[in-house]
Figure 1 (tube, rainbow, N blue to C red):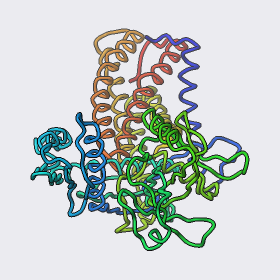
Figure 2: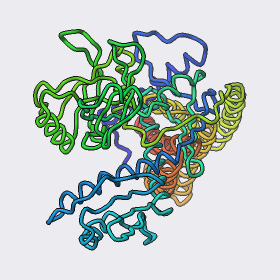
Figure 3: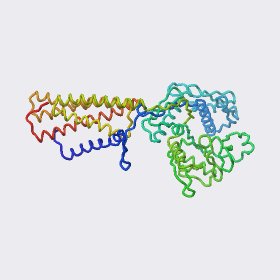
Figure 4: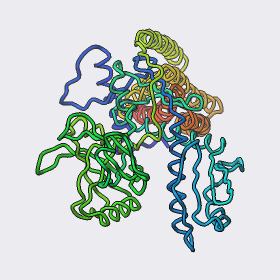
Length: 533
C-alpha cells in the first residue's frame, strides 16, 4: 500500500497541478489584472447573490391554453370522423363558447360517433376524471373541456415553458440560472451577471412558434382587407415587401405542420444570394408529413408563420424530401442566429409576459465574498496551526493537502464553468472541515497502531488502510445527499450541492492519496525508527 511507482506519482501530480493551474485565470481576474487572451481562460462564474443580475417574473395566458386545446380537439375530431368505417359525415365545427360543437349529417349515426370520439376524452392524470365531457343530443355533438383537463394542460404547458426558457438561457452562455415555477401560471427567472435584461426579455418573450400552412389562393382581396375569412381559413398578417406595412394573408387553419416536430435548427447563408437563412430539420414523422404536403401541392404557395406572422410565402416548386428546409425572411446574421437558438430550444407552448422586472446589484455580493474569504482564511489558518502543532510532520502534510484541496475545488469549478453562490461558499467551508476530518482520522489511527506496538511502516500502512475505509463510507453518504440536492434542488441549493460534490471528491483525493504518497516517499528515504505523531 505504501509503494508508489513513478508512473503513479506522475499521474497524481498531473491531476493536482492541472486543477491548481486552472484557478489562475480566476485569481488573476479577481486581483484586477487581465488574463492573456491567447491562453485558455476557465473562469468561475458568480451567482446572482454574489455578482448581481436580472430578475424577471413571467406570467402565462391561461385563456390561450384553453383555446389551443379547442383547436387541437377540432383537428382530432376531423381526423377521427374521416377514418370511421363507414364514414360519418359532419358539418362545420364550431369552437365558440369554450367547447367543440358540430352537427352530424345523419343523426342516426350518433351512437357510432359517440363510440369513435370516446377515446379522445381520456382521463386527466391519475385522478380518474375525464379531460373532456362528451354530450350527444340527437345530431348535435358537444365536447367541453373539464377543469381537471384544463389544469393538466396548464401544468404541462408551464412545465414545457420552463424547460424551453432554461435551454434558451443556457444557449446565451449564462451559467446556473434560477428558473422555477411560482403558482399555477408564473415562472421566476434569475440570471446572474446580466445587468441589462433587455436581451434576456427578447429571447424569452419570443414564442418561436413555427407553422407551415397552405395559402388559400381563392380568398378575395377585398375580404382579406376587410378582415373576413372563409370557413376553414384564417387571416395572418404578412409583411409583404412589395407593399408598405402588414397585409392579411389567408391560410388554411388545419392540415399544416407545426414546429414542434423540428429536431435541429441552425443559422446559415444562401450560397446564391448570400442572404441569411435558418436551416431546419424535421423528425421522421414531420419529414414524412412535410414531403406529403409539398408533393401534393406543387405550384401552390405555402406560408411560413412565426409567432402569428407570415415571414415568407414561397411557391412549392418541387417536392421537398429528406425532412430538411430553409427559412428566409430578410434576416440579419444576428436575427437568424437568435431565431435558430429559439427554434432549436423549442417553441413556447404559451405566450409569456413580464409582470415584474428588477436588477439585483452586486453590492451585497461583494460584502458576502469579502466576509466569506475572511471566514475561510481565519478558520483555515486556525485549523492548520492546530493540526501542525498536534501531528508534527504529518500535520504539515495535512496542511499542504488542505491548501491543494482548496485550489483543486476552484480549478474544477473553473474547468466546468461552475457558478459560485453564497450557499456555495458555505459548502466550501463545510468541505474544508470534511477534509480536515479525514486527515485527523488517518493520523489518529496511525497513532493508535503505534500504541499497540506495531512498527513504523506497518503502523502507517494499517492506519491508512483502516482509516480510508471509514473515510470512504462517510463520504459516500455525503455524496448521495449532495447528489440528491443537485438533482431535486434549484438555484442556491444546487450551487451548494455542486461545491459539496466537488469538495468530497477532492478531499478524499488529497487526504487519502496525496498525503499517503508523501508519507511513503519520506519513509522510504529516511527509514525512521520512531514517529512523532
